[in-house]
Image 1 (tube, rainbow, N blue to C red):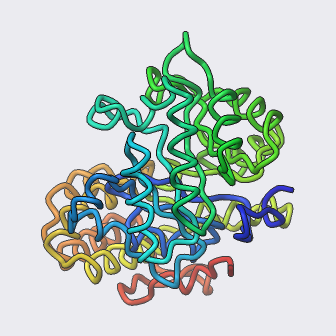
Image 2 (cartoon, helix red, strand yellow):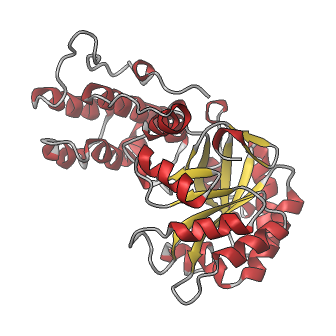
Amino acid sequence: MTGDQMKIGNVQINGFAALAPMAGVTDRAFRELCVGFGAAYVMGEMVSAKGLVYQSEKSRELLVLSREERPAAVQLFGNEPEVMAEAARIAMEYEPDIIDINMGCPAPKIAGNGCGSALMKDPALCGRLVKAVRDAVSVPVTVKIRKGWDSRSVNAVEVAQICEANGADAVAVHGRTREQQYMPPADWEIIRRVKKALRIPVIGNGDVTDAAGAARMMEQTGCDLVMIGRGALGNPWIFQEIAMLIGHDRPSMPISMAERISVLLRHIAGMCEYKGEALAMREARKHAAWYFKGIKGAASLRKQAVSLETYEDLIALCRQAEILGLCPKPHQGASRPLDPSAGTQSLHPVSQ
């Protein structure tokens, strides 16, 4: 069954769209924000299995999950079954609902070392990795794959079947090969083929940037859940829009500029709380630019975002939106005044 009627192993998924893992993006603050807007399931940044086994503090920090972001998975990458199994046991100390194995990352520093999408060149190894992790933990185990390594080795169906046979509880499929990176348009047909070949849930990923796209993917592929990556950047309310369209057959109200800024401030405040202001504000620069992307007249704001140093700088940047007339004062309660402490409460996030 799809959407709010599906399970990954024994984990109930209440919704239609999940947050994809993105290095340097899907941290705790962003995951909690997306769950507040209706993300049915979230996945943290990928973590090196070797880093965990060799006691990397940075790797362990990426495993921290809160009660506000459930159900949540941690994603591990590596290419040695024994190391992956040990890393999975370490990850269980952080009580994830699911452990995911990365078989899709195209980044040279990952795939170039035989991990991520490079694993798809060795389907048998994919199976051994799944079995090793499956035998090591008591929670569901999933994998995230691509269409294949390149146009000459489109083997997503084969790899997915091997993973299922070795104990995978769900498979997420990105509709591009490693060679294609993130261009051209994703091939949703391969997602449909994987879904047809498996008994376990299949999660579709690639080129969903709005609610209508999520609905089309589910209809065209039959996937059980849609996974949103780049479509959520500066746009965490996409999950609310998907829930409204697919779950209630009606569009949600457009977000106002005042609300957009309120969410941005809430997002970065969370990052500052969890990471400290210095690190958080360096990472906030790209997020601020994403929140202002596509807004007419906001080019100067995006340019200023790359120089953010403090949270006060961010507030000043948001005040510039008022000065530029991008964030008008509310009329008859249609939108709310800019308030850094308002968070997302005014936006009525979909309840989980």
